[in-house]
Amino acid sequence: MTDTAQLAANWTAVRQRVDEACRVAGRDPAEVTILPVSKTFGAESVRAAMALGLHRFGENKVQEIRDKAAALAGEAIEWVVIGHLQTNKAKDVARLASEVQSLDRLELAEALHHRLQLEDRRLDVLVQVKTAREETKSGLPAEDLAAFLAQLRAYPSLRVRGLMTLATLSEDAGEVRACFRLLRELRDRCVAQGHELPRLSMGMSGDFPLAIAEGATEIRIGTAIFGSRAQA
Ligand SMILES: *Cc1c(COP(=O)(O)O)cnc(C)c1O
Image 1 (cartoon, helix red, strand yellow):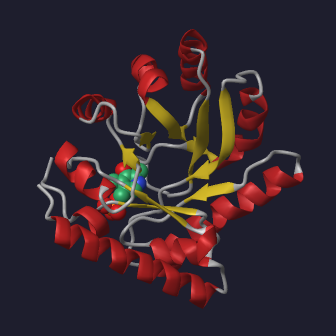
Image 2: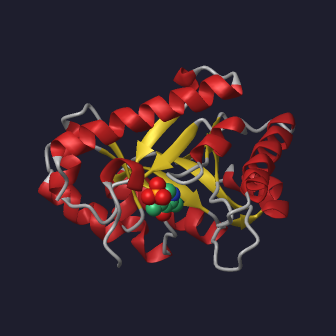
């Protein structure tokens, strides 16, 4: 359950911190979108956030999107998939999601394209790139990005809009920032090769000022808006 007044206060505080990070970075706050991440919070929390004017929510499990979409049927909500996606979830994603930010392999692109064609829909996608050293982090290896983007041209139901990453989990701000810088540099290189990649989704509750300093156009914020998550 999410307390409505607390949620409103959290949202205002995050927006102010984003504005401040933009000011420090010499950027226009209008360039940075906040994606509220509602994972593990129920439909009532999403409804409370909608009362603040939010209508786009990040989720990392397709089953949660299914449950919340059913509970909130009829509401104009855009569900954004930000977590590792199994190919066998492509059908639900094609039906329910407005966007996937965790596209990281060709097999998944193929499955999504197939299901989207059956639904007669298109989907915005971001390619998730691995910029952290940790073995567990999903994402496409950076050196494969250019070839992957070229291959995605075979799937016109996927509208490639940019790149996404998760930074390394580190106390060292320099190391975290290097992940965000790498994503921006990869984007710049691919744009120079003719790809259209206006969006950079990077930064979460704990590291978003660094991501904004490195050019994030979108930050994915869970804890700082909805509060801490119960241990799964
Ligand atoms: C959970 C999650 C977030 C939000 O994390 P917070 O630290 O709660 O802001 C952002 N991106 C991804 C991919 C996530 O899974």
